[in-house]
Length: 300
Ligand SMILES: NC(=O)c1ccc[n+]([C@@H]2O[C@H](COP(=O)([O-])OP(=O)(O)OC[C@H]3O[C@@H](n4cnc5c(N)ncnc54)[C@H](OP(=O)(O)O)[C@@H]3O)[C@@H](O)[C@H]2O)c1
Image: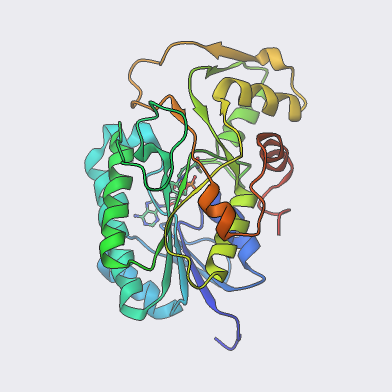
């Protein structure tokens, strides 16, 4: 470790958001990428956040100044069918990482979700009372509460929907699956009754890095586009942007049976992050354009 740059440990670095963040963070930080399956490269390491030994070994090896915790069961339906696993990773794993950060005074940024709210009204501020509908949302609420107790200096960044492309399959990046279906000539059904303010993974990474640069930033921040959009409208715009006919996107008007409950309107208000950060909060159209053109390899 001869570099003079501060060391950033990204946990969950092999996933969708982690791939984008690792590329962008490489200039200001010495980046260490941890995940269940170690990401390729000299600074990739295996870490299971449900294991104390694994977390301790990873922290000893990397001695991070800053940590971004992305590792989670991020699939809402999987959390609903395996609540024990979701609890162990999303809550127990978060506690283990927060304790490890507290021991060495590393700064922690944790990614949470708009699913902490029920989505029954339009517009949520950081101080609003949480009201999760799903197991996933409840695990995020519990993780936030643990972090606030164990490490009050941590930043908790809530997001409604992240869009963008990931390298390879198997991540939570919806755009990869969406584009693959359209390429195969298949139609995609999307709900016109679920609205979100999305953020692209590249812009999200810019905000994460700026929040780390602001010594005093702590507590909960909301991030998303300036306006919200239905998943159906978002799908139409993404299809057109990718060069596919808009009529491949079909309007879904009823929730599908057997899926985890989802809030109808997850619009996160962003006044707090706008006044803390210089990075501009983008419009929905800017988010869509960046999601299509910014791949993990091209956004550094
Ligand atoms: N994408 C969104 O729209 C969105 C919106 C709001 C909040 N978030 C939150 O943002 C974070 C990153 O999301 P993402 O979209 O990048 O998800 P992702 O692609 O699923 O990435 C999560 C990564 O964490 C890893 N992981 C799972 N269990 C682990 C464990 N026990 N120890 C270490 N690593 C583990 C996963 O590995 P495996 O794949 O091998 O399990 C995966 O590589 C998550 O906390 C998610 O809840 C995402």
